[in-house]
Image (cartoon, rainbow, N blue to C red; front, side):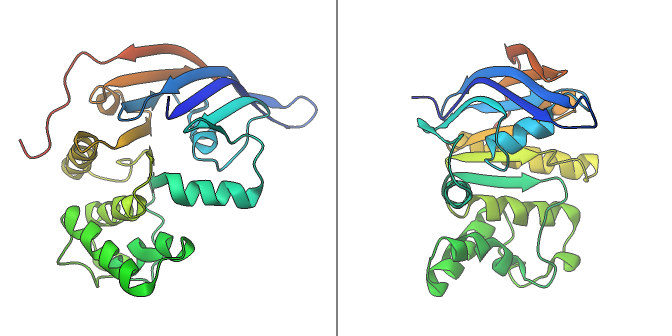
Length: 235
């Protein structure tokens, strides 16, 4: 069973008298354990597709199945539960709460999942240690570098052990050296069995993934395997 299946998904945004079709009959599947880049120029529909995959928006037409369950018609409360239980998000701008420590930021999804405080902090600490921030537990975002903040965001995305790790331009605000460190971390996570989907406009990032879905004008124009093998984290 595919982790993700889209069937003829389209998205229409009203705009004046005419409106815009941001996506047009997009269909594809992603299997559990894949490492996928969704790539395309600005305005191609990448952000709209990411929002639909992350259950942050609904398609105007078509069907979206996540772990075999159609999520297209779920209520807002049900979609929130799906996001909390199945999807980990990593954003370009980190989206960390400035008054919270790294530990508190990572533990936040577990609050919404109803996990007790002691267990929340234990799991958040373990996840921060796993991304190399065991000595930064009590630092706030303004006390961390850009790369460290993105590692906190990745730890937060993973703390609920989601089925899908969805990253939107995760290296967009980072310098080249730090971008490489974060990319290596994603490759490491994939090597551990995580399903990783990275939305990017950077061909150099997409070439490091195992598969590329290329968007143009709201349509998938290519679905191709990448010949270069992704390097193993730490090698």
